[in-house]
Length: 185
Image 1 (cartoon, rainbow, N blue to C red):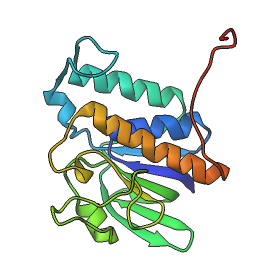
Image 2 (image 1 turned 90 degrees about the vertical axis):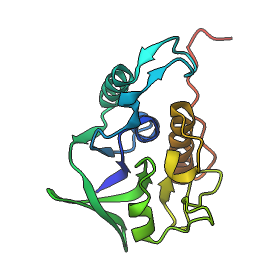
Image 3 (image 1 turned 90 degrees about the horizontal axis):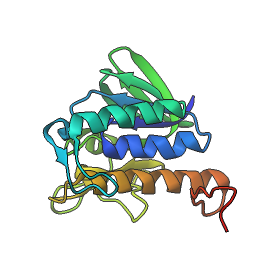
Image 4 (image 1 turned 30 degrees about the horizontal axis):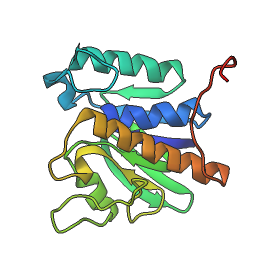
């Protein structure tokens, strides 16, 4: 059983995966590569002067793999169900179990709806400030929780917020992923 399964491999999903894997949670990502990033060119992403969206995705995937994320490229998730021990994530290739699920499927809210996550009057997935849905231990990020603010940098922040909340639950206290060089004062 994985600690975290992330459904979606865009900025939100990969950001969540980076934080959880970096902090020793076994993390699996299912990525159909249908991200809008392939149509983007980044000029408004903090720290990036100018980068093609597809190049950004390649760099991001390499980074999460360096932290040990298991990426199941082109394996589409068809269902997520709650179990006594967490969740079962189904694909055409099999079933996978995890304690936590991060949904990062862009504007496609169907998995969240099928799982029973509450939605707002606008039809977006209702989450708290930590990106947790009404279904405990299920997080929703990016365009699925916003009516119009679909920016890669916002989605990446949503993924990070979900991951930090998962890490806080796992550690039993507020967790901050803050790296400091040994020579910092």
